[in-house]
Length: 82
Image (cartoon, rainbow, N blue to C red; front, side):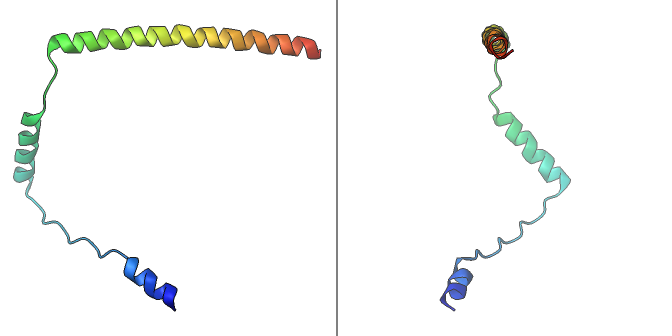
């Protein structure tokens, strides 16, 4: 009985329904939010793009090396078995 009473107390009340807004109001709110966005400059965008390409290249070389080492290790272990 006590468990049932406790379960009833912990249930959250349903949130009140939000009023619907018109499409025009929604579009105006979206425009207002987009105006608040801090867009990066062209130079920042180019610099970040170059950094992503460099990091992608470095990681691809790293994983190529790891793959080669693990592949040779597996070949070595299989040669011992057969």
